[in-house]
Image (cartoon, rainbow, N blue to C red; front, top):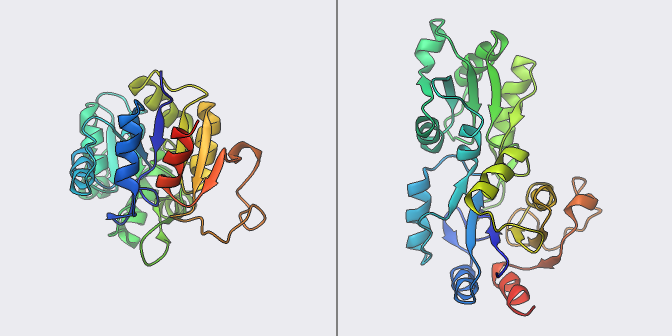
Length: 266
C-alpha cells in the first residue's frame, strides 16, 4: 500500500483560496501513483461541503477527503450537549452532526445552561462575543478550541488566527482550553478512524512546524515542511522558537509540488 498523504490546505494548497501554483497537479500525480490524499485543516470556519467545493474550483476532487478542526472539536462533544459557538458555519455544522445543541448568544446572556464553549476562527469576533463566552466558562462551561494557531496565512501575509481568539477568551475566563485540532490527539484519533492506513510511512504536509510537524509526531509518521505559507523561505530553526525535535522535517521544500516529487521519487 502506498503511503497516505495528509495535506494541509491553507498555505499548502492555497492562500485564502487562491491556489498555490502546482498544488492541484501535485495532488493529481500522487493519486495517479496510488496514494490516498486526505486534506486535514485547522480551518474550522467553512463547512466540509464548502471546503470540497472550493477544492473542486481549483481542480481537486475532495469529496469525502476533507477533515476539519471543527469535526475534531465535535469529536469530543456528547449527544445533547449544549454548546455556545464562537466560530463559523463549519462549527455549527459539526455540532449538529453529533447531536449536540447550539445555544444562542442571547440565550446564554439570559442565563441558559451552557456545557461547552466552542471557539474557532471567525472574522466577526468582538468584545461582546468574548464577554459572553468567558462568562459562560466562568459559570462552569468547558472551553474547547478547534485549534491554537496564532495566525492564518493569506496572500498579503499572516492575520490573527483562531488561536489568538481562543487566547483572548481563555485569558478573560481564567481557564485553559481543550484544543482538538492539529497537533492534538482528538484530530489524530479522527484521522485514524477515517483512514486506518495511516502509519509511519505516511506523510503530513504542512507549512507550520509547531502544528503540522508536531501532528506528524503525534501520528508517528513523516513531516514534509513547505515554505509556501506561514514559514517563510528565509526562516531557520533558530528563527522559529516553536520548532523542536518532534517537528523535524523529513523534507524541507518550497511547495506541495516539490513534496510530490520527493514522494514519487522514493
